[in-house]
Structure formats: structure tokens, C-alpha cells
Image 1: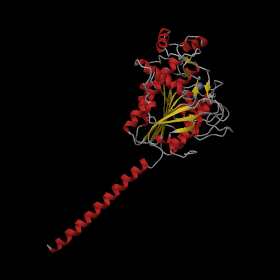
Image 2: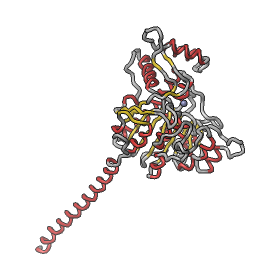
Image 3: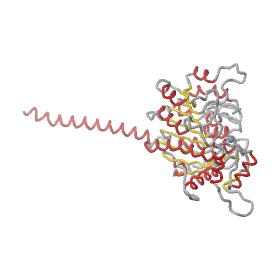
Image 4: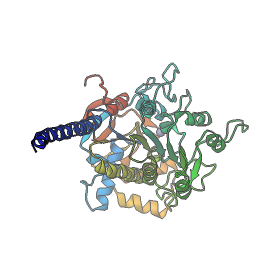
Length: 421
Ligand SMILES: [Zn+2]
């Protein structure tokens, strides 16, 4: 008995000690995990949305349309304009006040100003390093998607290096070296090399471990086994992208749909970086067509909503940044020369588009005049040097505020310091 009496307190102390050690180990593990999430300035899940050519007036016109649909003059907002953080980014390139998409995309991907038409190389033609490649090395899975071809300027700046953005086939040849897990878009520009004697794009990509899945059904089959996968729109073999249209091919998977597929494929176990481009916003603006441009921005906003739903499920670990590479068209919400405020006649615009079978059949000069009557003016069918808005929500979003430069965006996403911050 005496012996047992002595043993009981000792046993109790030993058990207490072991429990304490276990609790400390458990706390340490929880704390380490917490620190990994909260102390790392780079968010675990990153979405970068580029509305190609989407300037402030394009966003304003879209919200004007949404308000008109509700019988109001204003007040209706896109989802991304409701994000808490807003900055304004300058867009000039290394050799022009007015940038092209490839120089701007190089600024986003690598934080380097380069010349117009250069892609993933600096002004001396040295390759630049996309930050998505650094993230990939750190264990991030990477998805690159666009509503225009996968080897177009904006997506290409995240994997290719070329002094000519127009060399689509050589750009495609660089895709597999990225090691990124997922690509998506309508298709590719140039399905064979210039001499027609090189390996077809689809064969080449498959030989490097990047098979193409045509359409959603095939994608769902292949995603079960493939380590890398490219989604292209069904029945679009040999073609690149539809012309812009307000009546987007309803058999196609939308940009938001491609993002859903990407999220399903990438999963949320590992960190990821996703680039998502609304490319046809720019194409509509080059054509100076306000009505289809507005519909393109609405589809882009639908894709942002997919990311936003993901953010709501992972609010402490997700960053969403929405911006543009430049403004296209010099769009003005307002056109009048007789000292009267213009009226935005959305009904007239919409009725005409529907009556025309939702295609842009009007000659350019007539289209400009028609839109002026409806209260919209365009100054160019090219890009302009206007700064663009940057919207952000989520982890690290507070870093996006005030006046920034487009080259700051990759640094701000990763929580690295920029001049003046
Ligand atoms: Zn453009």
C-alpha cells in the first residue's frame, strides 16, 4: 500500500508531464501552421485577372448599362468594383508612352519594363523571369487561362520569351518548359510552324506531356490521369478564337467555366497561382464597339465571381487582383459638340445590335457616328496611354492603393517592397 501511495503521485506527475509535452507539441504544430499561413506575405491562393484593354471608361460604360437595365442612371456595380482596395497603375512601356499587350504583360509577369512587341524579354532581349515560375518552384500549382488564344500576348508573357509577340508557333514551343499544370483557352494561333513542315502544335504539345482536351467532357476524362492538361474549346481544332460577338457561342465553356475547371483540376491542397484574362474586351474596343465590349466585361466579371466564391471559402489565404494592361480605344462616356450633356441611349444601341443579329456589320465610320448619337465617343482604334484601375480583395489586398506602376504588381502580390512603400 505504502509503495502504491508513493507510486500514484509519481505516476500522476509523469502523466501530467506527458500531457503537457503533447500539448506543447500540438500547440507548436498549430502555431507553425498558423505562421506559415499568416506570416508568409505571399498568399496561398492567388488570382490575377487581366481585363485586356479595360480602362476606367469601359468599366463606367458597363456599370451605366447595368444601371439602365434596372431603370436607373447609375448605382449598379460590377462585382470587382466593389472590392475594398483600389489603385491606379501607369502602363507606359520601355519605348512608348502607349504600351502594347505584350510589354504590359511582361511588366505583370516579370516586373520589368520592356519594348512594345517584346514578350518575356527586357529591352536588350535578355529573358525575364515570370514570378509565376518562382512560385511554381516553391510548390505553387499554376493555371493560365484566357478567352483568347493561349499563345496570345498576355498568357504568353507568363511562359515565353521572344522579341516578337507575333511569332505564335515559337511561343507555343516554349509552353511545356514552364512546367505549369493547367492552360485553357479557345485554342492557339498557328497550329503549324511557318514552313508547314514542323510538328503540328497539338502533336508537339502532347509529345512534351501536355495533351489537349477538347471540350469539357474530354477534359473531365483526361483530368483523372494527366499531370499537365490544356483545355481548348470543343470542335475548335485548327482554329484560334471566335471573333468577338455579343452572342458568345453558347456551346463554348465561358471564361468563368474554364476557371471552374481549373479550380477543380488544381484543387486547394497545394497553393496556386491563376492568371485569367478577358481578352476579347480589347478586341471589341479595337473595333470601337461599345455594346459587345460591355458584354465582354460582364462575362469577365462572371469569372471574377468564381474566384470570389473561392475567396469566401478561404478568406485568410486568398488574394484576388483585377486590373487591365492598358486602355483601348480612348472611350468616352459622353459625346457632344453643342454644349449639351450627352444622353447614353442604351435602348437604341441594344435594339440595333439585336436587329443586326448580334453581329458587327456596320462599316467603321458609320459605327462611330451611330455610337456618338448614342452618347459614346472613341478617339482611336488602338491603345491609349491612360492609367488603369487595379482592384484587390483578400490577403495582402491592402498593399494595393494609391498610384503604382504596372511593374509593381508582381512585387505587391508577393508582398515585396516597392519604391515609396
Ligand atoms: Zn490591343
